[in-house]
Every structure is written in C-alpha cells, then in structure tokens.
Length: 199
Image (cartoon, rainbow, N blue to C red):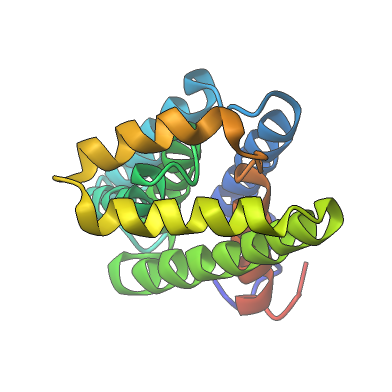
C-alpha cells in the first residue's frame, strides 16, 4: 500500500479519511467546533471498514480489533490535552475517527505507529502555530501566567475532572486555537511523508 500513490483508487480508505479530516479542520477553523455529525460517522465507519475486512473485503490490512484499537489510541493520546483545556472534545473525536480508519487500513502495528507519529506531528504544528500567535499578540506575561496555572493544576488537583473544571473556568481568558487545523496538517502531512509524497 505504501508503493501506491496516497490518493489512489487502491488506497480509497485513505482518500475518505483525508476528506473527513479536511472537513473537520475547515469547520473547526470556522466555528471553533468539530460537530458530532461528522466525528461519530467517521469513527463508526472506520469500525465498519474493519468488520468488512474481517469478512473478506480486503480494503486494508486491519480488522475490527485494529480499528477499535486505533480509536482507543486516538482517545488516549489526546485525553491529557483535553483534560487541561488545550482542545475541545470534537478534536478528540476527530482523532478517534482518524484512528479507526488508520487501524482498519494499515493494521494494528503499522496503524498504531502512524497514529502516534501523526499525533506528534500535529502537536508540533500546533506548537508552532501557538507560538506564532503568542509572538503576534505580544502578551507574554498573560501566556506565562496561564502556563503557570495549568502546570499548578496538574500537580495540585484531585484527578482529571477537577483539572478540566479549572480549565473550563479559565477558557474565556484564553486566545483560542482551533486545534483541528494543526491536527489535520500533522495527520495528512505524516501520511504524505510515509507515502514518499507520491500522490
């Protein structure tokens, strides 16, 4: 599958998830929210692709187990960032949808590697965009104070629930970044990389 162009007919599941990720990023940029009517169908259809592969479709290397694991991995990777208020629930579900399709298409081991490294790429892109926003606005003290509060909450709170409550209370003071955008750039960029930029 890596020898085929990324957006080829033989890699049609990748075309589907790329389109889904682009749609999620555009909506997040526009409305600061990724809707459930997009994320849940992505998640469930990834599971259905895995099931279809189990039944002999052969539209990928993974089955139901790989699709479910990819969904779970997408959830676990973003849970800490969501808990501290760094992104919304829609971004988490968007990554779960990506994970379900990647697991179903590439299989368990390769799919897990792709999900993890694509997530890392998305975090790096998000960091660069966030740093650019900080530099453009010049509110260094406010951003340093926010960071201090976040780190303090991580060590002084009783569990993720309390951390999330404190993050929600701070949210109106933040300059928001639609995190679906850097996640999409990271995910699609990493897919292009592993396919040697062969479209």
